[in-house]
Length: 68
Image 1 (cartoon, rainbow, N blue to C red):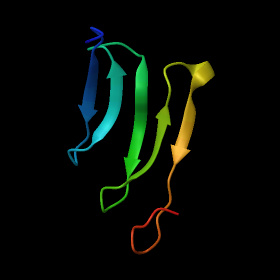
Image 2 (cartoon, rainbow, N blue to C red):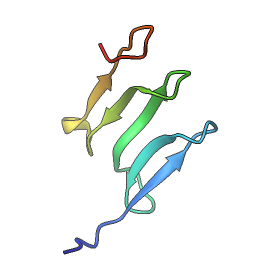
Image 3 (cartoon, helix red, strand yellow):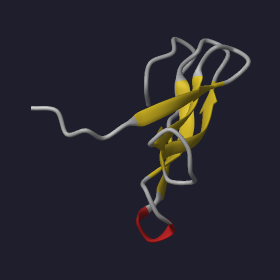
């Protein structure tokens, strides 16, 4: 069953997702400030819908691009 909720994606200059927004417009984000390394792997992002429940996730990789 579909919930009827919408999400929209913002794409950066490297054609990667930079933000996932709740709905078509507005300031409620499921993910924002996404950062990627040169290989295209996600290195960090802010997750959560509001300031009280947001967290920052960071990821590290070794020289073989394996997650640490």
